[in-house]
Structures are given as C-alpha cells and as structure tokens.
Length: 283
Picture 1 (cartoon, rainbow, N blue to C red):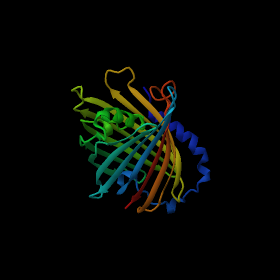
Picture 2: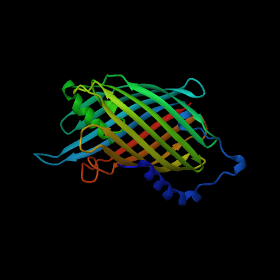
Picture 3: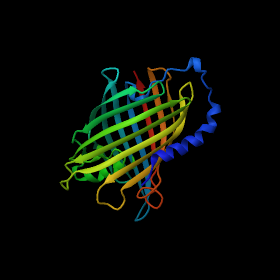
Picture 4: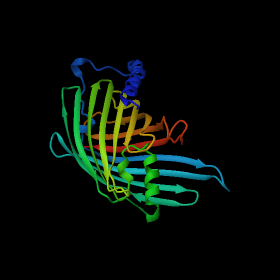
C-alpha cells in the first residue's frame, strides 16, 4: 500500500531549501490567509491525455479531454454548497465521441482550529446521468475518462450508477509553505453487476507560495479500490505551478502534470501522463 502522506513530506523537504527565494512576512504584518475550503469560488478544471497506438495499417492518435465545471458557494460563514458537472471528449484518428458525466451535488463545513490550521468535512452524491453520445460506447468511454485522473474520483464517469462520497481534510499555513491533505471514501451503487463498489481517495500536497500569489509544489494522490481485483491501489504524482490573487476576491489558475508511478497506469503499465489545467474566480 502506498502512503501519500510520506510523499508529501518528502516533497516539502525538497521545497523548503528554496524558501529563501520568497520574502518572509514580518510577524507583525502577517497577511490574512483564507483556506481554499473557506472560499466561494467557481471555475473549470480540464484534464488532457494524449497517446499514440502503434500497429495495424496506421498509427492511431488518441486525445482524451475531461472538463468539469465546479463551484463552492458559501451560504453561511462556515457552510458551503458544492457542485461539479463533468464532461469528456475522446478524439482519435477515426472517431470523435463525447460524454456527459454524473453531476455531483453536496455541501461541506469548514472552520479554523487556529490562525494557521483549517479543517473541513463534507458529503456529496452524483446524479445517475452519465451517457455517451453513442449509447453503445458509454461504459468504454467512461472507463477511459477515469484513466485521465488515474482513477481518482471514479464515480464521475460510471454510467447507470449512484455514487456517494464523504470527505475530510486539513489545510496548514506555515507561510510561505502551504500543506493540504484530504481523505474521501465513497461507494458506487447500482453497478451493472448488481453490487456496490467501494473506494477511498487520498491526496496530499506541499507548496511554496509567494506573497504576490505565485506558487509551486508537489501533490500525490492514491485511490484504493475495494473489490476482488489483483491491484487495489493506483498512485500518481503531480508537480504543479499556480497563481491565486492574494486578496479574498480575485482569480486563480493552475497547471499540473499527473504522472502515475505504479501499475496498471505507470512503470510497467500504460505510462500515461495527464496535463491538468484549472482557471476560475474567487468571490
């Protein structure tokens, strides 16, 4: 079993020596910090995977894109409504196929333990609306869309199913170093085989963030599958850079490179790499 927390700590040990490149705030003028879980925000997240399949009469170029419209909107100081609408497009040398995923609705509670530490807990469920533009390809396209995320959040593209998930996490501000971690167990009900499938998503990240909003760091994720298969975990690393307006209201953007580091998607497996982009606004 993989331990993403250890990888995040290792990433921090690499990043901290570069801390001197970022100006330290004097204790008396420490900036206001708003954890991501305590922000009202909306945006789009795009994952792009390219592969070339060699063989036959010609090489087959495969481009797979998933895009999520996401939002978390505060209804009180601590309670937020969450929404996620996923879509996918598969374009090859021969065909182009699209898919509408399972929209997720949920809510979470976020609050401070102290001025440096914040936590949150929440739950969400997916509406069973996932369909491909060609109904016969729904299951195949859904499985391929999940590959772009190294099987993380697996309920987004499983057709004819009701996914349910809970999540909890911590955010720690040790300026200029920011730590984030999350655990999200879930169940997918209504599988074609007539049984529920369980999973646990985990993720952790460490980043150095400049006072003007630029950041860079490393994120690690592992998805544990609770089933009868031979491989019960998939781990991936994601180095990333990003920018967020220091003020509470403004813009944010991020680019990451998701690299699976074990089978079936990494090392001796398929060796897929996903480019990840996000852009949105805080309000």
